[in-house]
Amino acid sequence: MTIVAMRRATLIGRREDKHRVLSRLQELGLVHVDTGQVSSGEPRRDHVRLLETLEYLLDCPLRRRLHRLEERPELGALLDEIEHNRSRRERLHDRRTLLHRHRAELAPWGEFEFTPLEEIGGQRLWFYLVPLSQRHAIDAIELPLMVVNRDHRHLYLVVISPTEPPAEQVPFERSHTGGLSLKSIREEEAALETALEQLEAERYLLTQWIHYLASRVAAASNADELGRVEMVTRDDDTLFLLDVWVPEAAVAQLEALCDESRLAVVHGPPAPREEPPVLLENPEWGAGGEEALKFFQLPGYRSWDPSLMVFFSFVLFFAVILADAGYALVVGLACWLARRRWGASRVGRRLTGLGLAMSGAALVYGVVVGSYFGVTPPPGSWLGSLHLLDMEDFQNMMTLSIGVGVLHLMLANGLAAWNVRTRWRALGYIGWVIILASGFLTWRATQQPVPAPLPGIPWTYGLILGVLLVLGFSGDGPFDSWCHRLVHFMRGLTSLGELAQAFGNALSYMRLFALGLSSASMAVTFNHLAVQARDGLDGGGTLAFLLILLLGHGLNFALALMGGVVHGLRLNLIEFLRWGVHGEGRPYRAFANKEESTWIK
Image 1 (cartoon, rainbow, N blue to C red):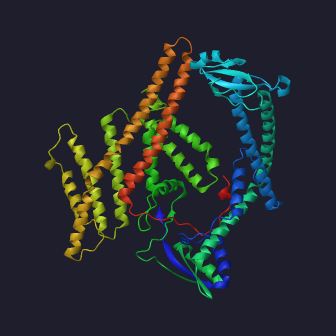
Image 2 (cartoon, rainbow, N blue to C red):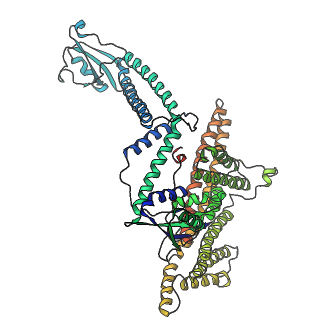
Image 3 (cartoon, rainbow, N blue to C red):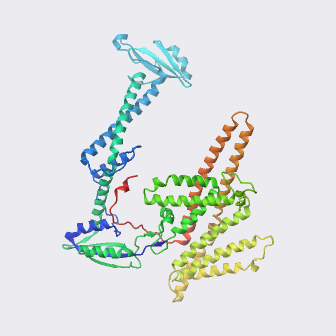
């Protein structure tokens, strides 16, 4: 769990070789280039067209087996074929939606066909919706009419007249039914369904070109990125210069590239005020914590990497909030079944590992608290012997939750102190560690049956020591003059202003106990309700029992899962990071070719 050390490098080469050299640099993917707000211009129409057609094929619910075909069609003709399929499919979908709506509006009028006007003496049919409250007004109409249907709101009235009757004669809202009958609408809908099935079959066949299109999209994206980098070089008549960031481990490869391409390179450590891009390096099994960390805040380059701490603490917090071995098995099974789909990407593999670790920890914790879908094993059983924690022991569970929170915050400050161990600032972090530990132990001493007076509790002197350390060593400046010492003291006073927030943050970890208890209690409640319904109903008791169990545990599982993720991340990314990580970095993005798999979901 480290932040990779970076070096600032400047590449110098002949201007006529710039495109070739940068293309080679992009192939190797060794460096980060700050392109800032530089843009290669508006996306070209052919690139947009490629992306749209690829997304259309990727959205197909069924795909042919993805494989690379040696025989490739002409790109323009293929795009035309896909776009023709898509546009025709969209038109038919729109027409089907319109017909479906028209059929629903026409259904209350019943089955009818419009007779040619010459066969009925030029008479026309006029359709009206009559509110039930105005049904008596029908008696005043002196034209031939008929009520063909009614519902809870309207009467459906048909009036015969060669021209549209004036509002004074028929004072109702007219319904525009159009010239189609229900029979003709159903026939057209059937034809549309057949045509759409044919288009879906054609779309399925076209999915064989997904790899081909993805490779063309990747090539277009790589060309755009190369164009942006070419725009940030500094050129004169003969030479070009490019400033890059390179990881220390890749400096040898960069120098080899320079020897191969006849480039000059000058590199050195970043200046004190420079902020290099941040690249985190973690073992693959714990890199899920890195992904969770990036979701909220990337640490600054001169800070430290808390990814593994976030990994372990998030796993622990999720387990405490879920608090049920049965629910943990469901989470683990879901992650295990999704591992192949998620394994297609690096982020997906990392999150799969994080999910499996969360479910494993939740399983262990669920066994320890003795909850299996809300059922507690009997005391004499094998599972009952593993039931070590009583979640209804409020005092102990509350103490455990606050203790976990205090330890978490102490670790944040302790790791921050280690990161600046060569500076006086480290003593300020150690002061916060002492304050948190002494405050918790002092609180525990006052909770005894016969509490000791504060002067008799040794931990209160630890509070005083911690406050003095924070007062004296909360700044980064030197101690070579009284002026600098005064600055440290003023910064210490400002830092001590966060004392109330520190204890508030520690108490916020009580949510672990509260959410875990609520999840377990709801599971028990749904079990009791299901048993009562089964025993209290003469008929359908078993069905009610199953429905209550399914719906109740489904709802409780969803709430526990959401609470475990949201509050587990909150305690890590707000309480923990604000004490241990200062500054925010920008991500390291290698100047490298993107593969076609980037666009294939």
